[in-house]
Image (cartoon, rainbow, N blue to C red; front, side, top):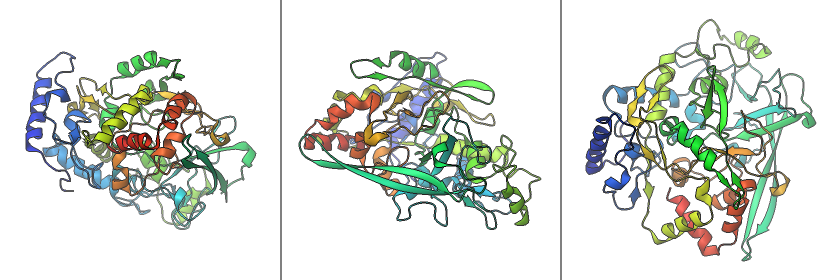
Length: 484
């Protein structure tokens, strides 16, 4: 893959100077920030030296300027492993199945973004290629996983193998009005499972939630976040006048209790590369050596189709290159920061209390990150970043259309109605990168306005502030979001 960004020589030199200066120091000070740079007109730094200035469909899929030499070669290998479709053969690049949710990382994260979800396709559920680009989580009403299905229903399978089930969706619509009379419509998707491969599960015993994969914007910076700063935000995040009280999620990964920052519910402490290969694609690896359908009839069906189970499907070194690729991606700079409507929208965003959860500025640890096989990326350290998230859990309510955003799915300490504050950096380029403006965990919001109006619970007061703005002011706030 050739470089996909627009180079700015002066900025590159300045960034190189910053990096050299920061790492000449041994203390934990933040050093220089974006205020010390002359920012190109119409842009604002989003991720320090990892900020890129691409606004094309490759805005999420371009490396940072510091990715050079051997690092660049590994980045390109990781990019290829991320995008290339896997097959059911037992050769290199194989290992798909017997059951799976996607045939490559890029099949669900097109251009490292959010592939258009099947929710808004004409089909009302799983088609020939499954419920495309969406992960289907299931659990019993008491929160326990189903023995025959695990945590995810795999509605795709290689030839000759039966999928675990098929997804159906029923859409419920309701029309509302802003106080000024302007109408808006919300859609609640209700999911169910049919064609279970084993014993059918009664609908009254089932919780089912469907997720569209997240944008892979700022993954390296998220992994490099200073946990003490996030925990300090949690202690500070108590605003009774707004009804806001965020909290951390802690999870156990690799035998250690750690702060969760990744995923819809902050239920991951790493980028889950190994889990993605295993659960999403059925690709065995050193962390998950068993097939995701181990013990199920699909194993025997896969054997009949020629699958062998006597070796791992991908090496740890290859998975680390994918991890490296994700963490070396640049973060798109803000655009049109001096536009009158954008500036007004930013002011209204802050006045509505949105920034209390969508925290503007955070910092990364001094030493950066360590990849899953031990490679260190110090370039991600000591950075001032602007993710527009506190990475805390917040109750998003259960009242809107009788369900709100409560999916009844527990992840770590996160309850069904609790969600991690979504990082907003790069969100304004999603339509350019992925060709759609579907937001929230399952893509039910068709635009920014619908996404805001689904906010309840701790976000109720801020939503009402937005709701009571004039039509022009609401458009200005959306214009601000489009600049991120």
